[in-house]
Length: 98
Image (cartoon, rainbow, N blue to C red; front, side):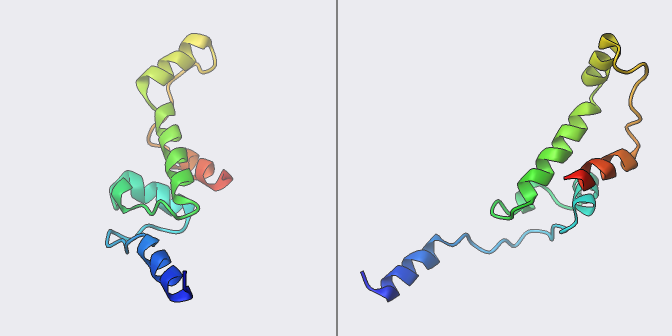
């Protein structure tokens, strides 16, 4: 196998350029933009080292806001009242922790 053939093979394996909307490089801006609908999962780059992790954190945070989770927290005595779902400061803190 020649060097030129190896290079052509590697070039074919490269993922295609993504023509989707721009995704922020800051975790807080990423979370806010995702929730605001500025971009969606189809716009994420699976080879980016942070996109998948940030998406997972946003999803986990949103899960804690579901009524079922809030009812479970109240039933187990962990929380006395519901979570303020409009609080972006809590989401910002979660995204900054990493």
